[in-house]
Amino acid sequence: MKPDKDFSAVLKYFPPIEGRQINDAILTPKKKRKPWRISLEGIHASGTHQIWIYQLKGTIEGELQADLAIQTQSGPFSIENGFVDLAIQSLLINGDNEVLRQGSFKGELAIAPIVFKENKGIKAIPYVITDFEVDADVDSLAFLNLFSGNFHGMKINGAGELNGHLIMDRGILLPATDMIVAAHKLSVAVMSHRVEGEGSIRLDVSASKPESLNLDIQFTTWRHFTGMIPGRLSLAKGWLFQVVVKLVCPWFKIRTMV
Image (cartoon, rainbow, N blue to C red):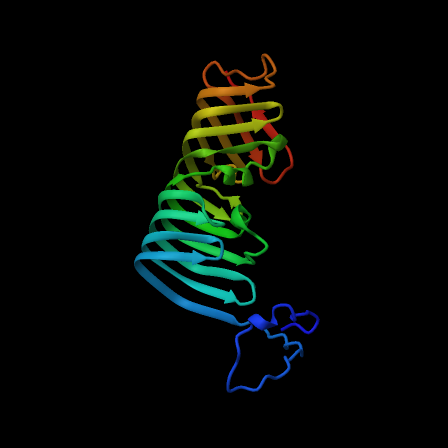
């Protein structure tokens, strides 16, 4: 019972406590405890499992191994020396937001120390380190915006099948990355243009130009676009644009399409 609150109006509804003397509440503040640091090495699991790690919840089947470190009281979480060979049946983030319906991942995985309370949803991607093969049916393509460098405020979204080789170190795609998205729903907004429809997205980083990400977006069908400048973009063949994102520079180059 709080000493500064009047309970007289509801006191009669309190159940009687028999055989125990009523003492005043202890109001002394509790000592602040130091967080625990937990380290688990050589974790190995196989079979079908339900996982729930902070905002991430899902059903996985296969094999995984890793070294895991956790600090209590919302401290940092990290994974090292991870290897996964998994089929993911469903993956939810922040409650009921399904980001992946079905998918398979095989390769190396690590997570740099991250405080999930401060990095929710796709904000956690810059902490992920991967080198694996991906084949996944994703319900949101918004994560691609992390790699586009905010080119003229470009926003990508949609849904489709992601397939390819992903090598990423803290949000930066590395050479030998080559991924293709077959998007049954695709939305791209850049400058004064917006196009929605179906199409494909390819992301690749070549060994000859490791500082550049090639982001190739092609619409096969489109339903809507606004603010188009005549003669600037040709949609006759379904192309919107090709972009070379310079990861080490704040500017970008648009290639002319025919």
